[in-house]
Image (tube, rainbow, N blue to C red; front, top):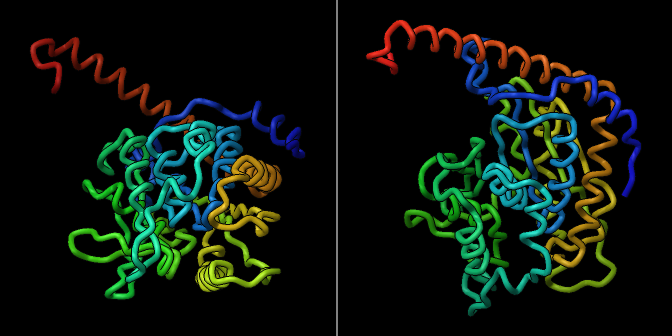
Amino acid sequence: MTFSGEKLEKKWHICVTKRLKGDEIMAIFSKSYDHFLGYALSGGGAKGFAHLGALKVLEKCGLKPDVIAGTSAGALAGVFYADGYHPDEIVELFRKKEFREFVEFTIPTTGFFKSTGLHNFLKKNLRAKRFEELQIPFYVVTTDWDRASTVTFSNGDDLVDAVVASCSIPIVFHPQMIHDVPYVDGGLFKNFPVSVIRKKCKYVIGVNVSLILPPPEKHNMLRMLERTFNLMSNSNTLIDKAYCDILIETKGIEKYSMFDLQNQLKIMEAGYHYAALTMSKDESWEVVRKCHRHYALARKIHEQLLRIRGRNELQNPENPND
């Protein structure tokens, strides 16, 4: 799929392309924020493949987040991206996969399926085993089923369990137990987790792939359940949309089911297309320019610190770590 990206490409060549982790030097620049740029990725089932297209566009803009927050499908895309995978590598992991490979049918008690396959898939393919081992700080949004409250995981060794919990749609899937507490899909209360990182970041780019679904042409239990969850999760995104410095919304993918793994590339292309349109706008590019100025300043400070450290090591050869 092509897009009106000539404007985007011309602007890209003007900007600085090298960067460092923003949180390494945020303490020097400001006391107000832990991170300079954050990404918030919404839930949306298989529509989450649109996140991968958006991430490709943001990379073409020379951007890389200092922190990521993800709910449900956004947590799934976000954890692989935070683990160092390129968007094309992520979609390749899911290529030719079918829904039944990620689940295990069980006697319906608290859900029709167990997320056994998804759990094994994450354990096999994630390089990081703990949150702290990810290349980018990462927040997973879940719902505590017993206390009816949003719970965010961001540290420790519950990485895989937290992502599975964030994807566990009630009734469809059994709750994911973490330390004897049942957790389900974070989209119940926080489908678009911008507010999770808003106060931590100077700028937040939000990618929302879960727009309101039209009424299904054919009514069945699965379609009814999908639209019910879609309407419910959309009702809690309005405030978070307003918190974005840049809001990317992928249109035209409402026709795809949340369990559709047969149209991954089409969904990803749609995400790429609408992200490119949004990032080509002048107001979006103003944020990009500020990010690149930040990267350039960070690089200068980092180089200066290395020179100072080098001089100190020459002056104190017996104590190179001082």
